[in-house]
Image (spheres, rainbow, N blue to C red):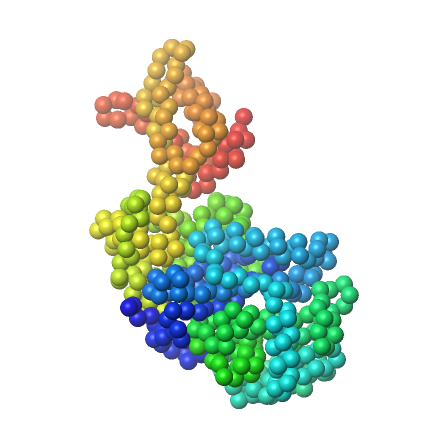
Length: 496
């Protein structure tokens, strides 16, 4: 069996992965708070841990891996969005949850085994909080329930490498008067009548953020499981607090044995932020609503993410996106439609070495150079990239459409032979729209009406289609339409 080694944030070293139960390898990854579209940074951990999920399934078998990724659907940001919009909270969270699933699906991410919503596990959270109070690890104060960090002081901060004293000294926030220790954190808080709330021994209220994951992980994976993942921005305080809660509630368990964190994302060398004007969602990229102005296929986004190792900061640039599109287009030229191959073991080993995805891309290029289409296709699929799908898509084609003899012809009944080759999945309506426009362009050229021909060519060009005329050594003239990265069928449909 392939030996997997993963970098464990808790021990700060790369370790051999030995699951608690090889017949049920268990992983938990913190999911999104569903109040809006997922931005590009939200997508990086989804793609990273999707690759790990695929690797674990490959090594241990699809039926022997359990992957949990939650949805936080009770949160102050959601409440604020409901107040601003006047829409019910349930309607907002249902809509944004589906947005997230749709967008991550475009990036090739498999759906986890379980996708629990926080509001489905309120009773389990209340039970865990009651248990923590009974064991002396939590206390009630002014309608709140707080975790007592001093009860876990010896261990608190080990994941993030901080001491409680240093954290207190470095605190820059106003401390609530009912806290025994400035670092104590909320397990339960009261709700006003206009906010979501549930009955509890401490009055009507709602859970704190950190208790959600502890309760859901215990319910779905048990008191000990194998891997806990997320972005490194969650290491403190979220993951630190999860450990404290879970280990105090279930001291006989280990909670998570391996902790994995991906680094953050930048855009063109800068932190992504709305104030800098470089903030965009995954959907913005997919639909072309960003500075680049072209629709970025999900496979390209995935390729760019994985071209940088997950533990290094990743810089999204338009240049990288275009290079990724070119690279994927090249690889897809050798897609094996039978999908009958097996992944190259060297690629499996590279992924097993703490998800060394940059090395995987180098190995994929070697397979392409060797012409091993079956192994290439299967290996790319292990990475979550479907070369067959790309080869059949409109952006995965060479994007050339030839019109043999189209620039010649005599008489008023001039009818050039316009054919559509390698047209991919373009609609019949778009083909019907383009054919007479090209016919007209060719006729204008034949009649040497150059100004009108150029004007029409320019208008067609605004849709992302470049028209050219070539002549063979034998003197045969033909026209070619090249569909570019920014091709937009909607713009073509709008042309008169």
